[in-house]
Image (cartoon, rainbow, N blue to C red; front, side):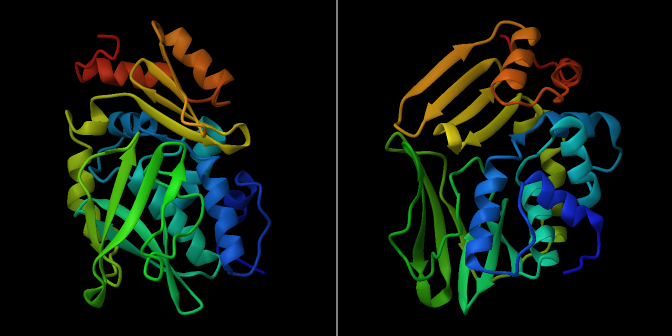
Length: 276
């Protein structure tokens, strides 16, 4: 089995996976490993803002894997899911992007005449592909975090993504057409808007990771560090210094290379104080 780039094998090595032929089982392995490996974080986004002149500020496929190895970077939805789809295509999967709510980037994978929803860029518990077109009762769940892909008009292949945390709806539903293929270029305008000062992920510090081997997920939002367990229990700790944040990223996340200090300096330039 050969690939166009060594980056594919590097990607698989990071996920601790071996190459396989496209299958639902292999896709399940990729989804589970991805959520337990690459963080959803905006630390890299802040540093791209500092260093890049292009408003798109998207790392190449090769740079994505290199950045994880050097800095433990993951990214937000556009970076993570765009590179994940490149990986899937290189591995022989038949897939395409789908736009949810005119903003979020998801992935549809076609296997055995069925479409599956794949998403490793939303901090959501999509540990395996979702057969949403044939299962209107589907739920992707971790503790009290639940995501449903529900039909609105099945004849037109229109669906909605709805998330509930602790029984309460989290944000607005994202509507999408499962058969409407999107390109990365279709997201350019919305991506550019996320890279300007005061945009949501340009005015906070964010890092999220699942650790299913410990039955927990980790979330850093500014100086609030949360550990959410699959039982539903959540512990929240307020961090008072960069040193404490660095210790959490190193000891709990196992991400000692994340350049938290540099990201904080960018936020300072943007007049954001996460300790307020």
